[in-house]
Length: 74
Image (cartoon, rainbow, N blue to C red; front, side, top):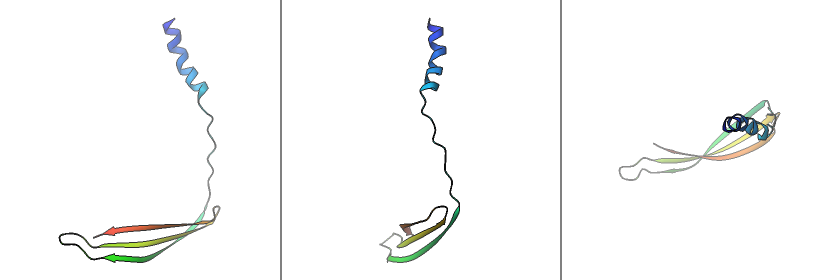
């Protein structure tokens, strides 16, 4: 009885697995614009910092915009 349980357990897990949704793909281009926003002086013994604004626009199979901020030190 124990051997039968061990054989049936993997089959039950496979049968209970959810169906996978097919992947969708988009092809297109995007443009990135970076704008300096702020710079900070280096503190004693530290590194100078800067902040850049990022604006992306997507065209093609996916149309939209995205915005972000990049922080840098050094």
